[in-house]
Image (cartoon, rainbow, N blue to C red; front, side):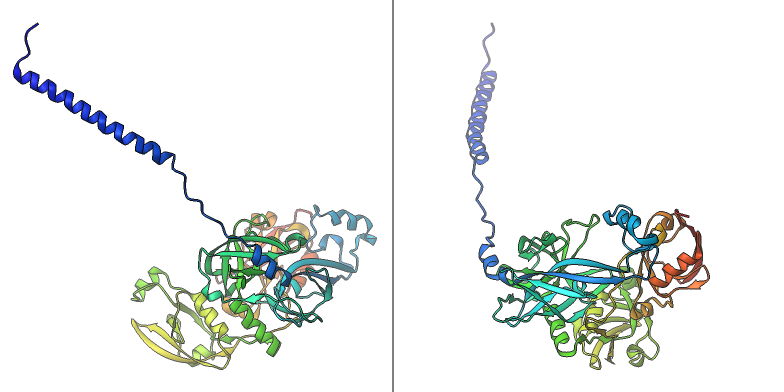
Amino acid sequence: MRPMSMPALALFLTMILLTFVRCDKQSSIEPKSANAATAVPAVVALPNFTALVKKEGPAVINISTTQKTRFRGAPFHDFPGLSPDDPFYEFFRRFAPGGQLPREFRSQSLGSGFIISRDGYILTNAHLVEDADEVTVRLTDKREFKAKVVGADKRSDVAVLKISATDLPIVSIGDSSKLEVGEWVVAIGSPFGFTNSVSQGIVSAKGRSLPGEKIVPFIQTDVPINPGNSGGPLFNMNGEVVGVNSQIYSRSGGYMGLSFAIPIDLAMKVKDELLKHGAVRRGRLGVSIQDVTQEHAKSFDLAKASGALITWVEKEGPADRAGLEIGDIILKFDGKDLASADDLVRAVAEAAPGSSVKLQIWRNGTAREVTVKLGEAEIDRAAQAERPQAKAVEAGHLGLALRELSRDERQELHTDGFLEVEAVEGVAAESGIRPGDIIIAVNSQRVSSIEQFRAARAKAGKNVSLLVERDGGRIFIPLKSKDG
């Protein structure tokens, strides 16, 4: 074997040294990784709601209502809301004389509410008690009282009840404007009749608008809310009511993680109006508006997409008299910035009729101020207003769900029709009827209510053509019922 030269020997020794250094570094790192992997994470305590529930729970009540509906011997298959799958369907079909409906039908519903005064005033949802013939309130101590509907405002879905009692437990009222997204909240109510059930979650968003509910800036939460929770309180962690649970968004009819509550600040204002006037008086501007998009902002040389773009002005209305025009963008209402069209709707609704307000508008690339004297919106009389027709499934299984439009809605839509299609399926969907269509007539007979629609539908027989209004035009769409 040839002896190793000096340069080769030096290189060999250097490689050995580097190998030992590298192994030493690896051995010093590995124990750290092992220690990090076995480290115990810090335990985070979840909030405890027991004290809140013990203190505030006794003021949460259960509400049951009874409504009597009279019929004039309508054929059984015309009975609204009963499908062949309903357990009462076969009973009425077999035992109703001559296939006729009973002349009186009693329906019941359940909900929640909460006591706001020791002498028996209660806050709840309007949709629970409107049209009710009898309202019964049950306390946590099992006492029951017949309640009087003092007032009900369907636009905000707030109602005030009164029971004859004294020294009652009451809730603490909070400030919903201070509520923060991500904050813990608690609901107490009677889901499916299970009284004083408690559920919890967080605030998911604030100021939510829902279809047809533009004047209420809903609090969105992920609190589990189910039928029977409506009208119950939403508490913050201080045990203060910050909202009135009102509705959920669901495709199945059950809880899907989207619950909505009316801010208590708004609910208390409505309560004051109902107690003082028996109705809620709201301002009216007399315009139709839409949101400002980025494309609109560019077209109108506006720095950012905000405000309310006017698309229609009522002739001789408050806005018209103040000089507002189609194409104006309302940026501020009484000094408050408007982020969207819904902000303007709420601001006008909260303003007093007859009051003068300053608007900042954007016209022809410049901002200017306009003073408007507000009119008065159509008054919703307490406990007398007609309840909105919610998805009334039509006879003959056409697959139509209709809703009657209010006067304000008809003005906003610029239509002389009265019935809007809420949802379609089956024959109606296959024939081309769409949600949002306005039904003007059945064959040649004009209709202005769901009752008239049913009568005209029955008169038409098997073959029906609906005159619908869509996108400013009208067209007859022929239908044929499956049962004919």
